[in-house]
Image 1 (cartoon, helix red, strand yellow):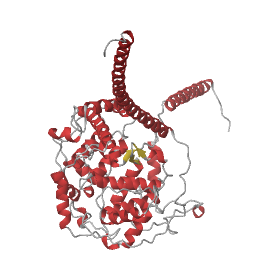
Image 2: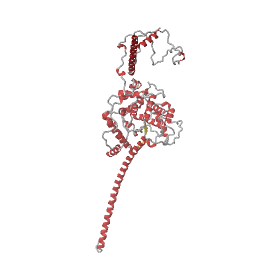
Image 3: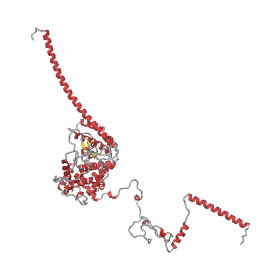
Image 4: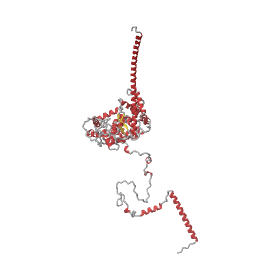
Length: 570
């Protein structure tokens, strides 16, 4: 077949080719612009045709390599999934149908609250496991009914007077000497850095003043045989985590509003962590701890033949019929400390004595172990009890923000006064609420309940009540020989030599500086007294010599008269 071309046909073909090239070029430019802008071409017609093709098939799609593909763990050989309660996070695909979906009204859509939809900033809020329930509130309410908020009239008595009070035991000279120590102390410089909006320290003060009727400085005091030991370099102010953990422990009803019961747990935590084998002077003695004190007093020496925890375990095994909740907590603290990573070497001897008082250096980790021990014994979840305290205490507790710095200064000076009185043997006991303590004694004398063995305490146990614990009952202690296995270490082994850290060196330097100031003041007073005595002696001697010289002068005058007038009658 021969194609005959004419000039008109050639012209038409050239025009069509030109239009096709131009349209293709325009389409390519538009496609390139859309790709650069991130807009892809619409594939709706092709997708519609492909879906229609799939829906027209009567059998599922198969692939040539279906038998060679790996099956999922939850897929059977027949392609089905097991019908169990497995929660698949991915929603299963449903077959698409062309049936129109029913219209959805606004009432069918679950309305999301605005507060829940809005993203919260900061750390997520604690779970509901720390929220107090009715049992926590009921357990703490009797304690708060007895321990009301501290009144303004009692601030001077509990915190310390704003102006010094002078009597036979405290004079102006004593106050001047105390101020010399206070002005050069690191505590004064540290307290000046406390901000009024420090919520952790203020919460600790509120809990301590209301429950214990004392300041945190009274609790962590050499008079309580306690001092705070920072794990890292510190400016002298208690860390926030330490304050929060200590405040949560203070409000626990197991201490009965008595700081010495908490001091027992604090001291024992340090004893177990450092394997301190000095004779332990137990602040409060329940039945088991009284028996332990008897065994400690039998040892004549600066160290025990075994660890204090081993001796306590032997006493509990011997007197298993008189277990009590305080010894349960103490024993559990020792067990947890032995099995934890917090156990450290023994503290140097120079750091265990402060101004003549045997001290135990408490850390934040010790508070963590004590909290876990209280939770395990079953005497109330610590965190939930603390949340219950914060919800029940109200807004009348002190200190307020503007009082925080003033309370620290007053309490710091009062501590120096009490330590100075203790050095001269004066009465330094911190006075607590006697009415509350007497009510505790009356209640414990009528209670005959003993808690169940370790790990068997139930929620309905009377130990969860405020006064149901019979720790202070007078039970005769039978002194029978103990049988305990000592540790492999030598009891006379010297403390492990280690290089002092920077906080320890700073603490030692501050302690040395305070001791120098105290010794200098004492030496100055002694020298002034000696000089005054010597002045009196010298004046007396000079007076005697003057009298002797006068007598000699009289004799010389008489002798001269005789020599000049020999014939003169005497």
